[in-house]
Each structure stands twice: as C-alpha cells, then as structure tokens.
Amino acid sequence: MNPVRMKSRRSMALAAGAMLIVLFVGSVDSTRADSMRVGDFWYNNFAPIEYADGVLVFNIGDVEQNKSLADIDGLKMDNYPTLALAEEAIKAGNHKQALDAFKSARVKAQETWLQIWLDARILPLLDKTGQGMDAGKTFLTMVTNKAPQSLYIENPPIRSVRKATKDQKLYLQTQFKAQMKKEMDASKKKTPLWYALEELAEAADPSQAGNPTNVAVAQEGAIESEIPLPYFLLQGSSDPVTKLLARRQYDRARERLSELVKTAGTGKTSQYLYQLGIADLYQAEEAAKANNTEKASKLYKDAGLKFMRVTIHFPRSKVAGPSLIEAALIHVKLNRKDIAAKLIKQADESVDPDDEVLMKRIEKIREMINA
Image (cartoon, rainbow, N blue to C red):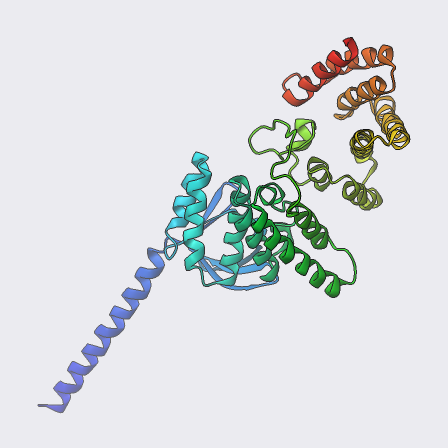
C-alpha cells in the first residue's frame, strides 16, 4: 500500500478517534444530572472534588466552591438514583419512604463525605420512626467518621433509644460509655459530645421504662417536648437550652445557660430567666414527688422569683405570658390561690391563643385554682 495513503488513513482514524473522545467528554458534561440543594435553590452540574474537616470542595459548572456539609440540604446524583426519591418522599411527608431511599444510597456510598451526609439524614428519620438500635449505631458511626458535630450533636436519638429492647439497650449503653471514655481521654474534659453520649447512655439504661411520659403536643417541625413549653420556643430548633429542657435535662440546661450569658446581649435576658425558672420549677416537681419538701419549697420560690422578674422587668417579652402562667402555678403550690387567679387572668390575656400547649396549661391551672 502506498505509504502516503496509509499515513493519510491513519491520520483520519486518529482524528476520528479524537473527535469521538471530544464528543464523549462533551456529552458527559452536557447531560450531567448531579445537583445540590441549599435552602430551596438547586445548583446544577454539581461535581465534588475533595472533602476535609467537614467542608466539601466542589464545582458548580466550571466554578470551584466549598460548603460545610451542614449547609447542603439536598442532593440528586446519577450514581445514587434513590436520592431523588428521598427528596420526593420528604416533600410528601413520607418518613419511611425517605428513610428507605436514603438507606439504599448509603449502602452504595463509597465517598466519606457522602456517607456522613447520608447518616445525618438517616439519623433523625430513625429516631422519628422509633428505631432505637439503628439510631444509636448511626450516631456512633458519625462520631467515628468525625462528622461535623453540628450535624448530630444537638439532637441525639434519645426518644428512640428509650424504646429499644432491654438487650439492645444493654449493647448500646456499653458502646456509648466506651465512646464517653474515649472522648474524655482525648479532650481531658466534659465536651458537648461527652454530654450527648451521657444522655444516650442514660436513655439506654435497661432498667428504665421504654417510653417517655407526658409528651407535650407540638406542631410539625417543632422540637418534641416532654414538658409543656411555648410553641415559639419549640420552633427554635437551633436553641440548645430549649432542647435540653424539652428532654428534662435541667442541670445541663443550666450549664449551657451559664455559658451563653457570658457572650449574649441583654436582649436574651428575659428568655434566659424564663428557662432558668422552668429548670427550677420541674426540679421542684421532682423533689415534691420524692417527698423532699424543703428542697421543693426552695426551688418553687426560686422559680417564682425568676418568672416574676420577667413579668415586671420585661413585660413586652414573648416569654412574659408564659412566665405569668408558671408563676400562677407556683402560687397554687404555695397555697396562694388568690394571687394565682389574678396571674392566670393576665396570662390568658397575653399569650398567643393559637398556642395549644399554653392554652391547655392555662385551663389546667384554672381547674387547680377552682378545686
């Protein structure tokens, strides 16, 4: 064959091959379906690059960006088709379907950042559906994977762990306590993670009853509380003190408040006083049930003083009405029903009538006054 013609054919073949490569690469970029949601906005052509210390570096198109995993609210990825199903299930309020879809993606996930991100979605769904064993294990996995603590530290799966069987609790309690020791050895002090693990270890105590009692009604999306708290506080899912009070962790709530008052402005003073009063009030109730009359009386009075300080010094505060309610209750406990009746009347005129928890609280205290 003519060498010139052979060279020409080879050149044409190479050119055609190069064109195919260009077309192939171009087709991947142009049809890429991976996308990321932040808030309500979806960013298309999402391509992760690297992950370190809770921060994901990625491209959106040709622009390199980075975000904390805690800021990524949704994902749709070609390699994990069930992520799109999870998004639809979440919109429809179908927790079980969303959980199954996230679990399916988690089984396939190879990337550390994606494993952590999926665990952060799976954990609250396991807790919500009462799967204590799996929820406890997922929490521990996030600790082991050094997940950003903002993804899981404020909402440990207390409620579902309480519902676990005795054998499951025994296993989980052992694991939680072992992790507590590791955390103490590493930090040489009680950290927020240590406290969360302590709560979980207590919830996993096999001798305790399986279900919490007196769970207050809370609207969708609010913190679930074991004591009656105003809905506007339960909506504040970023408020660590309310979360601790809602789980009856009164001493820990005081510890957090002592940290917060050092850095917070005066605008939070009324809320902090109210929260401290709540801690005093419910510890007084516990002391009364234990027949520790002296301690109960002191705590009732301490709580009453805090609630009255709110109503006198911060009458326009959102917690002024709830403070009147609890002050009325304390006056009932102290056999001052005349004062309690005046306070509950003021409370009825000042709280949000749509807050079902507080309105039921008012009615209950009225019944106690009239008894």
